[in-house]
Length: 236
Image (cartoon, rainbow, N blue to C red; front, side):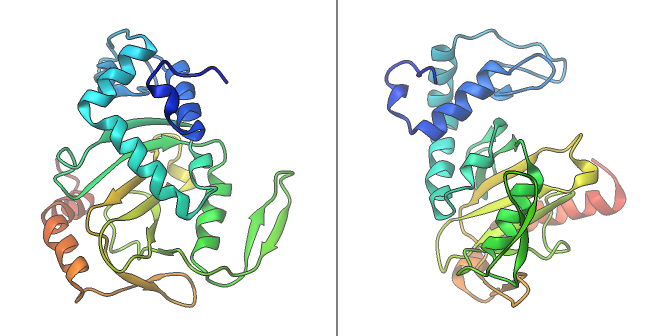
């Protein structure tokens, strides 16, 4: 793997691989690193060297977002490896102080879905092996739970919430099959994660009365209401 210029060569190998792949596969059509390359809806972008791009990402705070998400993915080591390319990185200020994260593409979304289902500690699931065959995976201690789709406002995606008692937590949203051609997957860190425990089937049982959950709802409720209204009534 070609390395990044100093000081970015000190980043973890997994991060460097995703950054390099995203940079090398960027075109006017795919919007990779759209914010930092200056791409807009008209697909006009600023041509930057890899070092210039990384400097811009560092200065904008978006490189720090990648580092934060990468670090939290350690709870499920295979998770970061499912990310191929990234776009639309946002910081906490850009995310209304609710979340920071990015959208991403992956090579095998079904395998990612299997990974997240297994992480809920629910009943035995069928996982796809590298040869494409299915193999049962025994329940593991839960690290995530599956969101109630009526509770989330992340579009046509199945979302999985990291189990925490306080503070931030990962939120992994996998686009459903019929929508994958036009909707990317999403991973972000909620600044104050909704506190949950997993039900026997892996679904989230929300603990709304906890201070962390109350803070999350206080921050996210205006955005949630607007997004749900847009879904129901189709307005901007």
